[in-house]
Each structure stands twice: as structure tokens, then as C-alpha cells.
Length: 155
Image (cartoon, rainbow, N blue to C red):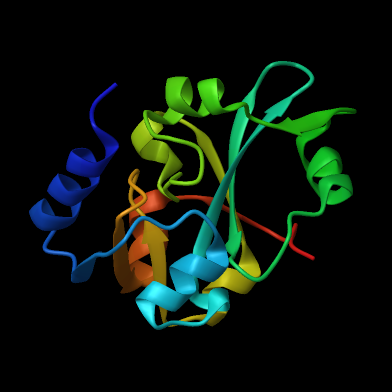
């Protein structure tokens, strides 16, 4: 798999998409990320990789101040069991460390679900496969590039 950081930057530059890149100290939680970005947690696109009982991986993107409702996710995915991907599975599926998952699952060939509440923000921030780099871009541009399924799974 290609380096997701390079693949995303290349995509954004090639399509003349406006974005800002922030280099900062490594962050590992939504709270830390919001603090170094000077933004609210609701503007953060928190990306969580899940694995279904059937062995399928799905990327779920929601605001940093929300949690994924596992009951809603299981219903939506038609599975009885769902769990977070292990650190090894994150590296294998997304070519990044746990905690630095990026919201463009299509870069990694992953089904991507984005909670509709993230769209309440004009601009969003997210890690880009690294703990020390964040991207800020318009939500509409993110949605156009990521091509996710719009769902309601946050609580």
C-alpha cells in the first residue's frame, strides 16, 4: 500500500483542493489534537477502524467529541459482533499507527462511513497517518474526495 500521507497530499494538490497542513507535537487523543490545533473537538474528524464478525473492516468517521454507537453500527453493517481493529490490523489496513487513522478510507480501499453530524462544520481537522501532522480543509471538499456513506452512528 502507498504511503497514505503522500497519497492524500498528492490527491489534494493535483485537484487544487484548498487545505492547510499543521506540524505539531505528537498527539494521541482528540483532546490533545484539539488543543494543538486551536479548534473545537467537534471539528475533529475522528477516524475509527472496526472489524466485523465476518472479518470485514470499516472506517467510521465522526466528530472528536462523539462516540460511535455500537448498536447502530451493528444494525447498519448487519453483523452481530463488532470490535475495534487491533494496532496490527490498523497498520495492515491503513498503513499507519493506531491513533493516526485518516478519514479518507478510500485511499486504503476501505468502506467509509461518516456521521452526518460532522457535516455541521464548515471546516474539519484530521490526522493524516501521522501523530504530528494535521490537515484542515472544508468539509465539502473532504466529502467530495472521501466519497463516504453518510450515516447516523454517533452518540
